[in-house]
Image (cartoon, rainbow, N blue to C red):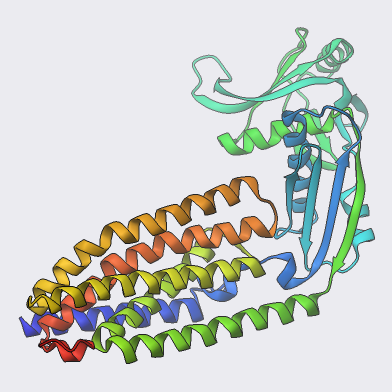
Length: 412
């Protein structure tokens, strides 16, 4: 029994050290899964913040989605892979670009209106985006007896219908490039004259890429402009100071918690600290894995979820203490204590999780950053408190630590 307990403790030690090393060093040249691989938000890395407003009344949700897709595509085309375009209110879009110093230059790079065109091999413009009535993602066969694949379906207005029929008739066997902002987004080969005002763009699409292309094409024919109503620079120095202050506060808080748990609960506190280290490593790895953008409020969400993880352990340990006072053995007290603490832990965490979900879907910007890290932290903390801590405590008992005094309890 002692051997099994010690082997399990050794295994948990290897897990804790391995996860900690992974979060520090990462994997490969890109240091994947490390803290250096976590994307930083505008408030941490500095950059520009721009708010656009639609120059049209009663903008539909579909039109706004298309405009957001257009702006996000432009951000990606300019190499700003960390930038984000998000809806704000009913007719505004907030664009945040980390690592950029000049807001005016960024606006010029992004532009305000889409320029969509259908161009032949000679470079002549055959149609413009204003002639497209609709563009949607479809899934089906694009040829006789062909497989079912994602593609983009185009519908032209009356002017576009006539010009597209003429363009396809004159370019059979040739390519017609679909160009957005001087970027070729598709170059299909014309197979036959098309007179019904509908066209199909097929290629190596996934469902997501076909939807993105359809959204870009719809955005190219939007009947409104996007006006800049607010722009500001966020200094990188301010972001660096905010990050260092947040990290320092977190480290000091965690260190105090680790010391308190060991002083108060002895071996149980050690088990809780052990599980807490595993929790922090898992939390950082998940943030990197899912490309979560870390903001200053996001750091607050991490620290709050750490507090909730510790609180869950305190609830468990107090239940164990109550069972020991009733005269139960340590092994029995641990089993009953975890069982009795389970409803309280689930209730507390689920209600907080619901609040975080509401913040995520109704909030924007840094509020979403806080909600995201809090949700991730709650889920992982429940796992470490109810599973990891329990495994470590039971392993300590099996390894020969039977005296309740070693766990901070003084029972008669």
